Length: 46
Image 1 (cartoon, rainbow, N blue to C red):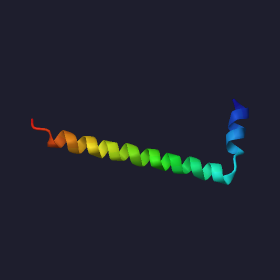
Image 2 (cartoon, helix red, strand yellow; image 1 turned 90 degrees about the vertical axis):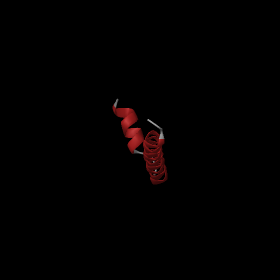
Image 3 (tube, helix red, strand yellow; image 1 turned 135 degrees about the vertical axis):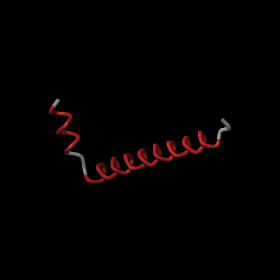
Image 4 (cartoon, rainbow, N blue to C red; image 1 turned 135 degrees about the horizontal axis):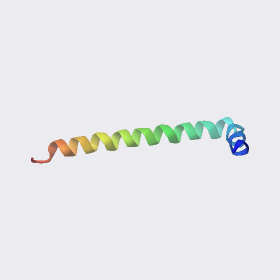
């Protein structure tokens, strides 16, 4: 368990920033999908 954690922590700064970018992209995509679903559900005729 500790070896993979140490390996992940030992990555270069470029890899770390890439992971942060991917996380930000994922969060923004999830937020966009959530807002789109809200708009679609609101626009649907009841």
